[in-house]
Length: 475
Ligand code: HEM
Image (cartoon, rainbow, N blue to C red):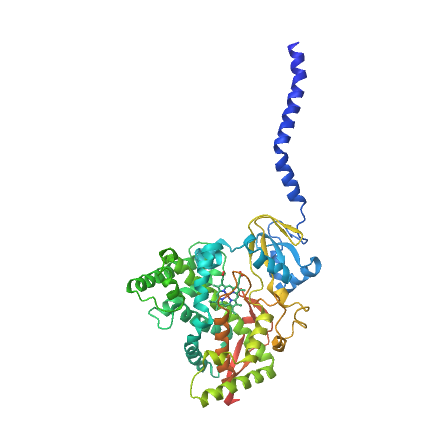
């Protein structure tokens, strides 16, 4: 009897247990089911783990992105650099990621890059700390703050250019040196009580490791870069301590950061916060501007009539300076409409930052698609800058297209939203000052016939554009 009731009871007990388990798991199952049935953006995730990374590196990035945009539309998925990504290519969608829904998409960088620049640098943060830093960085690079730098920047140009007379130079290397020196002036202020050459040398080692594989083993570029980072940090911390103790904060971004908290201790930045941001801003300032300037050389070289027109504009200013017996000022740089349009068109055509990286901080509904938490989201500035709907005949270098302002949200060489570039005015200023002297004094010929683009990591003309520089009077 006992055996009979047990055999009868066992299935009942078992089914009740299963039922109970199902009831308990039901909410989680429903959530899993709905998450997996939400529509991810169209696109291919490529091979397991490597995804489409090899294709990105073997194809021209322009065609990699535009082919997929044609096939899948303005929002599509892929898997690159070890991460599932959603690529975003319409002005409206980019604005959503970077402006209207910016709190859902945080900036993201590989941990090795964060370590190398410094985890407390502005790029890696959101919210109150980011806003506090952004206020200080913007204050240091506003037109009112940098207008006084014109004569020092011009001084640099007048030191660099004569060394090029009748020689062959690597444009990118020279522009990196120039942009680095301008960044140092703007970050440390005019009169410098520091070992410029020492800092430059450490920076150079840091940069070499920045674009290498992040293997921290003795002898690797990454390891050398991390050692240079430690030394750079020590140098900066010593300088910060000296300036704090002497109460001479000095000018530039460092001066502004040291003065933060003068009225309220809560706003004070620690030495490591200041050091990370100094290193970070110099990083952001020089490679980008150097790449853009290298393209200006290329486009003016390839468009002879435009070069002559820019020269005429600059000669007009030169005549005025001679008549008034003075040097270039900020106001002069605001009266260079054609040269400014050449810079605008260079930034569009070359699109130095092809895209930027964000990460979904939670599951997000976006443009009718589902983006899971943790996926990377890449707004593609380059696609917009090369879209014929916004810039007719987009592959043509044509500064006159900027005689009328571009449609809203279609021109973003300096990004948009809370993380947009605080250095845009400085970048334009240093390009204008260089172009004033370059076009009125020199002509240049590209050496070799190798056309094309190289990514270092920003797009630059092949081999950094070697050129032979000839004084105009000798032609
Ligand atoms: C032609 C030259 C330059 C280009 C094309 C450029 C482009 C950009 C872009 C597109 C961003 C936004 C990135 C994002 O949203 O993730 C950015 C951010 C930034 N740029 Fe520039 N930049 C240039 C020059 C400079 C200069 C001269 C400085 C020096 C002050 C600078 C400092 C920064 C900083 C600090 C950020 C981060 C801002 C933040 O996270 O709030 N950049 N830049």
